[in-house]
Image (cartoon, rainbow, N blue to C red):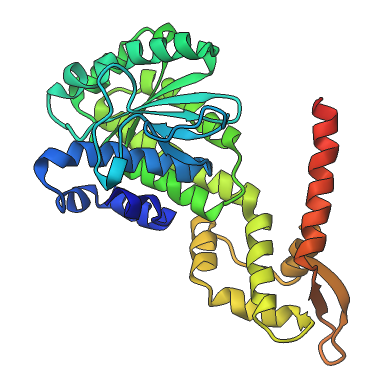
Length: 326
């Protein structure tokens, strides 16, 4: 099971999160909590586009990674030990200690999440990281009133709490799937807002509604920022499927209008592709080259930039930025 899920696509993992009870129902009761921990860790690995490890094969030489603290030796899952977080995500510039529980009843806070502060403090101590850059992420299918009340009245200096129901986690994953060049700082920006509307909420239901609205608004903003890269790649994909060196913009547009992911992306934004946008995006993203215009309709004709040329330019850009960073 574990090997199969590790290789699952981000969209498959998102589907499991959206229908988590049905997914976990396929496993024996005694295995479901472990499977939920594992699924949550995989989701963050996909969201952050970071390599996934378990306690069995964790490689501390890899600075940025997601590590589930449980074991998956031989394809058999064993729950993360109780003395620390279920998972840790070492992101670009910050860390996440992740606690996941299927419990939705009264024992959710006292029996599961209450220990998250100590787990985080232990992680900060052993890893020698800045506690201001560590977020405590609590994942569950449904928050319980006791958890909400504990967090609502919790002194903020004791940790950056990010309570997430699986529906919100699924939307965050969906955002990362569509905006595949999403920056880690975008996720941090979302998490920085959570304590504000947690403390300002009037009730659990108010917090839940606000969370859903904030994640939707965040998703739109991220997709808006990443739209050029997304449309550029999908336009490039459309060009490569047409067996000619040079392709008219209208041909690319017709292919994009039939693409389900492009439709999903634009529907979330509430936008449509405009005339001239494809040419601008392809050239701006250095994926296309202006090869001329058609005689009949005077529309742009575009040619794919060879992948090796695109990659070479990107590597030179990375090298230039790294030289500044040093």
